[in-house]
Image (cartoon, rainbow, N blue to C red; front, side):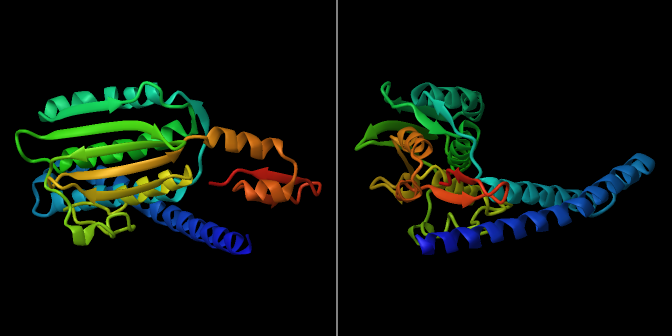
Length: 265
């Protein structure tokens, strides 16, 4: 328990530093962006100058990196809602299906109709799943591109498997792809999969990648199937010791010396 508190404190300090860093960088970037727009409006001929496109492209990359830093920094902050998970996954598939059709990629699904309702952050988890589905599409260069999403429940857990027949991931890179700022994709920030992992872990879940026997790449997500019951029990139980054993972190508020309990994944 003590080690967990120390680890949580260090994580909070890291996120605070990252938040301040992003804030300090974002302001001058916004000013530079405004000044570039003013230059283009006043002197439209600059767009034909050598390196002008490089300047604007590098600025857009920096803005994307800052947005990704913000997403990574806030990935652990969840707003949970009880969610009918089968319908939720089908909605996500429907939202990305037009993109797959445009790219000529076949998207197949095998989603169990009896998945349990989960207490999740639907916005954050959707971001994580869409990251994986976009990565799968980007990995495909052949005309017969295929992606499959399977979802089923087993041993009180919900399993989601996303498989593609794209270019694959070298086995030597499997242990690095979730590390922040590590990327093997040209133009990538190295934060997409790191954000995805942070979101999954914030839900008390796990994510890993593996190479199938036929060379296809699969990403596996495992979520606790009774997360809603665990949170309900934590909130109802007034015992600090019992709540701690349930995986909750107890915070003592300085406001009127009142103890408060926050669910921290």
